[in-house]
Length: 233
Image (cartoon, rainbow, N blue to C red):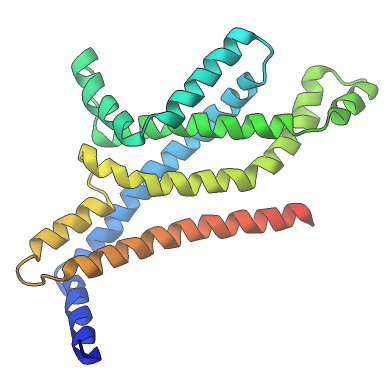
């Protein structure tokens, strides 16, 4: 195919954004995606820190429960969890959940498990000498944890948590299967609405969606790199 025809085909595909408010609608869908991810991440960080601390406890029952929860969240696909939360809870317990609420619930449960494991690893990476130094200074175990261990843990955790955040943002594309009107769903609506007039609109729509996801995740990835360099200096 000549280059002129390729250029014309691509131009025709992207002309779909000149119709109505298609691009504005995509941006609005991206906002829904970021909102779901942001709320889920906020809950996951808070609950994940607590969960990670529990994972380091010496109580065998608590550690066994934490391990089972972590493995279930890792093994079970997020799509299945979404279906269980959105359809299963409604039928089993009569709980009315919107697609957004079900999505936030699932991503929070998953994010808590992943964040908790990161916190556990960060806590266990603190050298024992730090604890011994704190005891030598006359600090209590609580003071050692809050003033010595926890600050170092958070510093080591920041770059790793950025990677988890990007994973959660990308995984939010699954919420389209529980009826959430986000960026992917709106993209499908635009493609269907222009299927006859612009048959190649899917190329442009999915290219723009890819660029949107890439931009958001790239910002967090660069933030993680900056934090890593800052910690090394």
